[in-house]
Every structure is written in structure tokens, then in C-alpha cells.
Image (cartoon, rainbow, N blue to C red; front, side):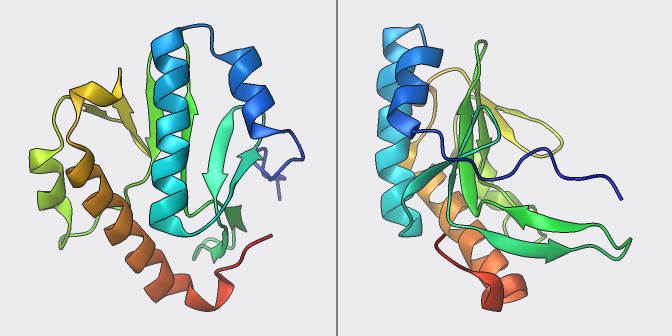
Length: 145
């Protein structure tokens, strides 16, 4: 079975943002997202792979046998836009996207250009619904590393 590429690393989050993000607004938004996700999740930011900032972790195992660890919440300040790893789609929470603002959906993330394009209180609801879902399905694996 292939090894997961996205694993927790020892890279300093602040150093990563200061060296990787070359746009002042994106840098400011990155630090704001860190503050928000830290508050909402209760976990400190950690680097996952070379470019994802994650909060907390949980262990998953799919029916296919694939298993691994993943951050509960996370984001990456990519060059073109932010990738937000904050949404676990279920029938009960699809409506939360209605008030989010300007975004695009990817297979595993929400893409935004800047924080001012979205409603922060809607993002908080999405993040907290994701935390609740992960806790419900992977609760015993919730941990701070």
C-alpha cells in the first residue's frame, strides 16, 4: 500500500508562511486563518506535508483498507488561492455553503482567493460541523500530537 504523502512535519508554521507566501494580503489572511482555526479546533497549527497547515489529527480507515492520519481542519496558502480543508460533506450540512460567499468547490477542499470574499461566521459553522462529524465518526482518534 502506498505511503501517505501528507504527514505531519516539524517545519515551523510561521517560518513557512514568511518564506512561502509572497503577497502581503495572503500572508495577513494566512495568520488570521491560523488564529481562527486554532480557536475553533482547540489545536495548535502544525505543518502537514510541505504546504498544508493543519489543526489536530485523526486516524481514518476506509472500506478499501486505505488508512492514515489527517488534520481535523487545515488550509494551504497556494499561489493562486487558498485551499481550505474544512468541509466534510454530508446531507445535514450542505446548506452551510449557501452563506459562505465567493468560493469554488474542489474534490476535497474549498477554494477562496481571500478572506474578505467569504463570511467568517459561515466558515466557523462549516468548521465546527466538520469537527463534530469527525469527532462522531473518529472520536477516539482525536489527538494533539
